[in-house]
Image 1 (tube, helix red, strand yellow):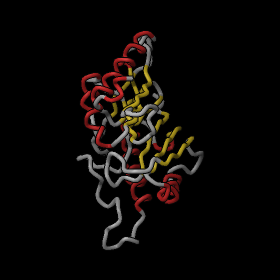
Image 2 (image 1 turned 135 degrees about the vertical axis):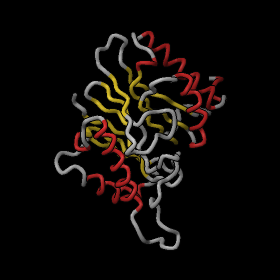
Image 3 (image 1 turned 60 degrees about the vertical axis):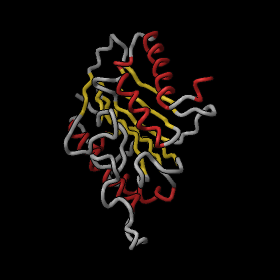
Image 4 (image 1 turned 45 degrees about the vertical axis):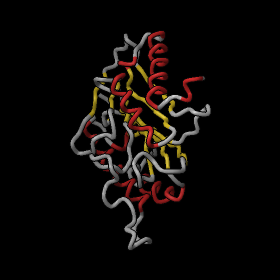
Length: 232
């Protein structure tokens, strides 16, 4: 347990070394990762984690969702990582998805990765290509009761999600799984109402979780982790 007091960089490296060994024993490797879920203890840990990530995934990094404040399992823990991989002998084809019609990712990750007939999205929040909160996503301080930030941020994300889906030759209605994280549940009602408007038929399986506290992008109130069906 000594490593639990180490820096975010040292902890990230320790976990990725363990995962690399597990992948190898399973007939795979980190290079076969298609999706990563990364939980960090504080938004300030993102940069250090991303620095290590670039060393372990120098080319064709997996889709990645980064979530902060998830309640670490040991005092001093600053990061937990879960990976979805293909085996080395898998015949499933993978494709990195990229479109200029959606913002650049927050770090060393693609907008999405297609593996077989599944499309794994990276972190979806209301950020622009500079990594900052997009314009119009919060209420103006001079008009504190005007506007619906939860609805505005969901609408902005869905525009980007639609562009990524189209780049992967699928559509928003083919999203089959959603995990939605809110900074506070005050945003739930207006956010879910906007989300539901994109699915006139069956809705995707969905889980909603309140994190509390700020996200990696200051001012963001919602984070989406999505999987879509993308048949060849």
